[in-house]
Image 1 (spheres, rainbow, N blue to C red):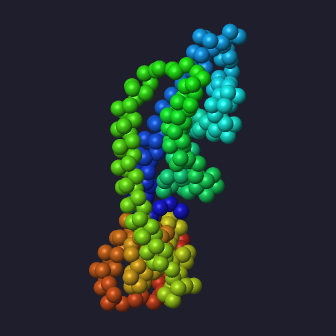
Image 2: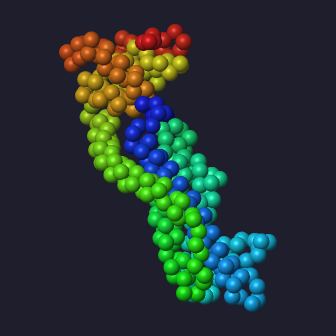
Image 3: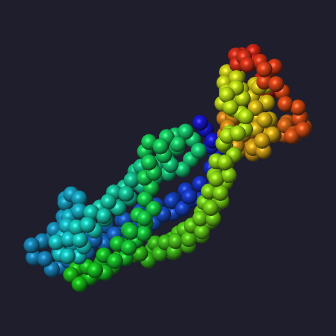
Length: 285
């Protein structure tokens, strides 16, 4: 079922996607800078001091894995850290080549819902922090054994990095507040969606097939059920979920309910309303 408010994302989800976009840019930088520094420091050391020649040649495959293996052998990093760095670089590759798998859980479409249900959320909220830690720490650890590699990568990216980090802090605070409001809204909606002790079960149930025509529009009977939900104090969004209609349609029905008298209106006997749902059904447009 599509979301009653449509596919357009509300502010919370849009801010989450902005947050992820900024994080992914930083992940791309930290990953590439880390790889270049690790490989470059070993190549520079070998060129200057290693009589046996360079351990990383232009034709060497999987240069990062070879370089990390050297770091493990020399005690710069542990095997566990090696595996984590490889995993983080693989995550960087997912961002570069399959970014949709890291945003697909945010959405109101059926595709997004299926992704959440069957694929799970793959976004790693700690990847940026772990990569930054390695980027800042590993070469410091290796300084006593390898050549210090001076590049312009850090200085060139520093203004962007600072800007992105500041924006991430701002978005984080905003998202936290919006999540609190969303959770409260969800609690209220969950209570509203309950039909216990409402009398709207069996023939008067919102899901009853006679409430809609074959085209999906509300019949007169369906409109009456909407009105009965409003009689119970249900909000338009709750009515939209219960009747499986759009939020816009629910708001429109609320207005006609008020015109009809609201709580003082006279209920229509469902038995007097046709239950036919074919092309000739009584449709409220």
